Length: 515
Length: 74
Ligand code: SF4
Ligand code: SF4
Image (tube, rainbow over all chains, first blue to last red; front, side, top):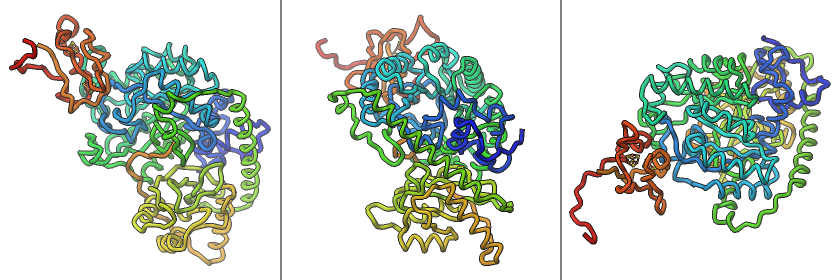
């Protein structure tokens, strides 16, 4: 099962592309040596038909995230379970759904909004229904929305996220509506642990509590998952990592969902602050640190594809990373809009994106050949300020998040995101926000930026993080490798000594930028 | 008697509306309200009041025990 991947030399372009795009979970270059992407590893090596389904899906492919966008519509306000990390009055930071109060759309309004957005933003290729409650606790509204969208925009992929309680009842309908992605949030497979996460469920006209509730929920989740994968519907599993409650247990969850055919597992940090008013928030339950989260993701990676680029973004945002265009698409404006859905223009855009992806593939090959002959067992993290397209193209002060790459002689591997508050609002930096950024990337040795001001540069250096500007507007992986080679050379010549870095903080609160 | 919804606590999630066997609950100008004429406290349908069981906020769907002191038009 532990098999190194041969660096890109595959004659099969789809497979090669996959390595480029799926560099989060599979480790394009073999990563830490235990990635399960070798062809013998089955699940880890996505078959061509699955890759075909996910390659333009921003939630599944880190690289696609920069070219394609999804949107969510809030047509499903009711929920059938209660979670200790959720307060129904407010936006849920953990499961990327807006609060019940944010916006409620009828299926007709929602469908019109989707079509309107898709005709203006060609990147919009995925429609998700995730809440604010549970889509399957609102089946009529959820399926009506899908039906209306599919009529006008057959090229838009449909997906839904559910807690799984009602899933076994709706599997047939899901397959009928041509929904090819379902996300199930599974935080446990042990009812005793479940009882600490879920105070109650509402099922079969009755409220169940404690271990019994968790047992019913878990049974339905796993059965629903089995039924979906048996019908060829892709299933992703989301798990919220709650230190001291289910953190160690998630390895077992990972095994259970893999055995039932889930193709991707996304472990997300608990986001909990007292002001959210959740049970966990009020009880002072902490979220994991960046190191704890990565250690767990690494432990599970030997088992199956892990998804590391999930930013837990707010589900009601519209557009690509770093731009939220939802103000252009308020319910009032949409109802007045004349919408002209142009399928041809959308296809042309998608073809252009394929060309861009090929350019990245070439850069990736160059990067790997540059590493040939180097020997070292050093592994380190670097942060990258990027707007997308695989380039170092963001100003340090404008970055809302940093991508984290793990580099070693095996290559550069995307391992996650760190969100930071907008550090620079209109040209000048503020000291305390800079500190937030430093805490968020404190486990990195360097930060790659397109540009950076003098003051933050000095402060970063003082904190032991090297600001790197020399690779501005170049490809991330290639640059990281060049920098790493120079770093190794400096150690060899005695110019610098390598020092390990500490842990980093995970920012609390929902990400308000676009998905 | 009937149940009522404490408006200040209601999240507007609509879960109760779908569960009520008597269609006693409706959204009126953004507020969820129970029509006391239609509410049977779920007697004859279920052992427990459905709106109470599904509501995410405790003590939001409650028995309306207050005797009316003044009835318009009565
Ligand atoms: S108690 Fe039963 S009948 Fe009355 S409003 Fe609630 S759900 Fe409807
Ligand atoms: S279930 Fe409770 S919170 Fe939701 S609409 Fe009904 S009364 Fe309001």
